[in-house]
Length: 405
Image (spheres, rainbow, N blue to C red):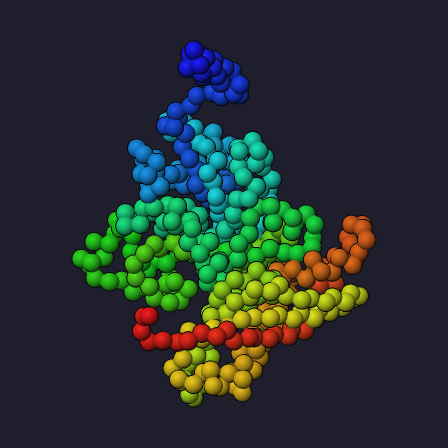
């Protein structure tokens, strides 16, 4: 009898379960084309030429993870116009729930059209506010073509490369749409956005055999990976940062300048610095685990006193005596070098009228209302700002060994 009651209760629960759920419309996976990245260029017929990097769906979840990608491009005066045009030529609906990046060409970023494009309704597309921004040198359409590779088909791993460079190498910033919107709307700081570039010295898979038959063609240093020759891998890569003045692109910083910028912002995780002298070369892994301490004094010429505490580990020591020389020589050399670089990058940002080091965040804390802060006109005062940097580097104990233990 007890078994019969248990079975009856179970059947009753199974019957009622669908009624307790929301009314969800069943949709087949092949009815959607999942957009991983949106690229925005200047259009010829319309305002924008918009590229959609779509994920190729596999037959299983495991296959989808390693699936490749393909590109659909359409022009429009806004994103919704371009979507309507794109839908004419594809047998599915574009879905933006997996979109992680929006790429904008430097031509768009230097004009008012970047702000105009980003004023779209994210909710209407189910597009996340946390989508990451990237500025591309040249066109996004060409940058997307540089991402296609039969040797490296996994799209997800290509996207994670940006996060790895931010967390482990400190060469690029990480900026999402929400941060950009806050910077433009509040006027408390300016953003730094990672930069996408193209290495034209690396042949595409379609013309690789042609170049081998005709011989290698000469390439300009500007066509390499930021002036350094590279072979293999994808033509498209992320390197350095674009700093903004409000909603306009103000200028570009290379990877070393970006490391220094992130140090001042308190967003640096790991990075590498080296010192060379007559005794050899010492390479350090630098870590910033404590946020910078900033004191601001306002007025017509604001002044900031910034104190940073960093930790260093010796990764390469061709002199063989780096630890012995740390207190007497290397510590002071490294600290002085970082201070010099902080001053240089600060002056470079100020020349571009970009508060990319975000000193406005500390200045606005001294005002009791939004109106008082706006009346102060921070960006006008920022032109006359001075900064004083102090750096302390502590050496972490680490035994350098030439063999694997």
